[in-house]
Image 1 (cartoon, helix red, strand yellow):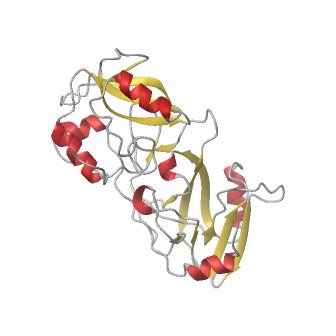
Image 2 (tube, rainbow, N blue to C red):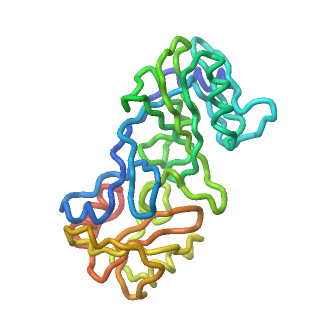
Length: 286
């Protein structure tokens, strides 16, 4: 870390706790609903065809001032300190077995599980914790660095804190940068904050045009999701290895570093939806 833990905790003694926004829904669902697209949210990627969003969120574990540019420690996966009535937890190894985290946390009386998961750029360095009942733990607070944040939910946590007397139970998910070839467990649409096509006019561009846009950003197409974006029937959604270059793109997301899934069809996306989407993402409208 570049600063002393005491200085960080003192500076952010009462940091805001980012609210957990509703997760990103499938684009075709948004279109058929005829409403503005919601702000992209955090999702856990299970299958390439669906988005699953945690039902609730809470930040947990004990003051954590997480070192995101990790330095591996052979002695311990976590560096835990007690500072001013809080626990300060520095993650020394972002690739350790979760059992190692759990064993160390138990020694401090914390009934907390810590899981580090690969995430797209929009969620790198974010912390998401869930209690057994999926409610937010109000005692836990995030520590954000000064200045603007270009992440989903405006949450760029460098750590979090919890009172020493915390007796709750929680599972904490910490997002880290994915290694080459590693599938994202936490991701969102490719036009969200921090993602490669943010504010890029890709809607209704041809597959060939979008392929070129992605290539410029070091991304290749891994597969296609085919479905009419104006249809209410989602039973005909299918995955294809390729589609004609003349088809129109209506969305997409990254599945691993440098690889994207593209949503495409012959039917264009209504302009009203595109305008609402851009407005919701703070991007220029037509």
